[in-house]
Image 1 (cartoon, one colour):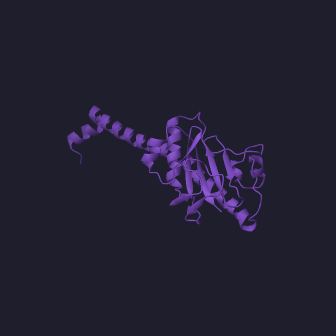
Image 2 (tube, one colour; image 1 turned 90 degrees about the vertical axis):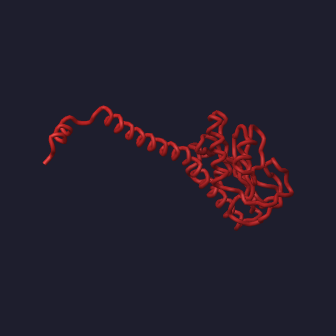
Image 3 (tube, one colour; image 1 turned 60 degrees about the vertical axis):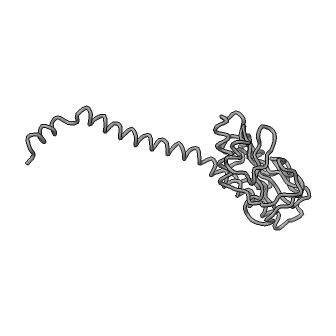
Length: 211
């Protein structure tokens, strides 16, 4: 049987202090859920873009495996027509691409033909700089470049001619670049702290792949 105190407490309900505690706990739970959802929303564009870059690299390598001397399509609409981009990033008019941040994806091929290519991810300057920097760091850490030696090109310049890279083969990107304003900066071997310090305004990321 319930005691007289227990019965009184049952009918009386929560005290003000108990109500405050319950509401506080509920607030913490809701805040934790909201924070987790926010992190997931910010992280998802990075994960989607990493997969897209990987798929694009696979498509290009697939073409050059069977046709090593093929002349590469140099304009966005020609690259779309060649099927180098996944359908999910092709715009409505089928002549350009659009990424998770509203910018474009672009392929830049090396000269001589069949030596390498870069996948560029444009991040519009209209996006808040904090979000742009977070996107750059997320892409760099999620798809790290593996080259240990970079010669035959110019540091801090996106490769447009043949370069010597070690290791020569592999599915991962060899080099990674961050665009700070209009200039590309080599970020291949930089730590997160170095990229954060050296990059004040990220407006794009590029990954260089060997063929």
